[in-house]
Length: 338
Image (cartoon, rainbow, N blue to C red; front, top):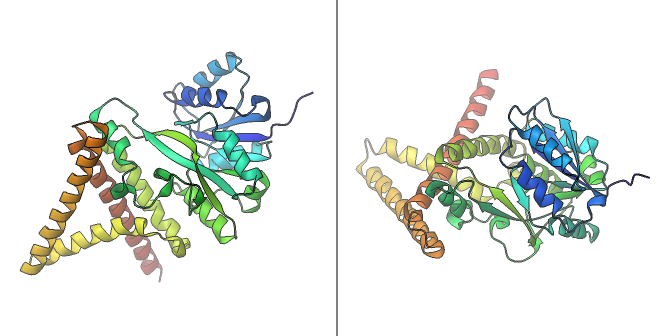
């Protein structure tokens, strides 16, 4: 007699042939009983070797129950909702195809939910380099530095506490359906938007630093810039719906970029603005260099003296510029309608 799984791991996926096996291996190594767990991969019509990798893994008969469902819309929120609709477990654990959860990840998530510590229970994001290059290593290192991520506690917290968001997350399936699942109108920030609705409904988000997952960073500055442009663009849209969810770490990059633009323009006429513009750039540059030196000394990688400042600046300017562009685009669209 087939037993109903207690946990459904849902994974949005598109062209992840390089990392999907790493995720499946990590799920096979979970301390949580495999007979009480299913893995649902919502695939956005991958055209690389992802599906073949999954099929090959299933042939190994590791005992891991893996199912693939199609996600024809090819966006992450739709993939997650498609997987939730197919899920049979009481608990939902959301992961990515380029993540590697710690062996106790699912057990600790389920334990937190069973103790009602939170309506969404998650942990720490450990960013690792996707390639053995100085740029990729710098991207991974910068991802947990306060100058880059502010007070995002899921990057560096060492004590369990209630927070405003957690990466990925785990939920009771009934609760997730009750609040409407993921918002398919967003192409990014879908996790934060969901967490905002959880908090607005009176729910609680719980971060346990013993719940850890490795996440593979982008491998070069171009990919990183595109990633953070997408984050900033859709964060503006998300905040237009939930302005009360704004955190200072999200406000600073667009304010900084906007301030530099204003100073650069006014410095054409006002010498004081010119000196202030140069002073701000000098202070920012010094902060970047200090952060690079700090990480380089900690990790004993000289290349990060140069790499980390480049990475942090890329994150700030891409995110901030996209946020401003998205906001202006939306305001102009409203003005033309009016």
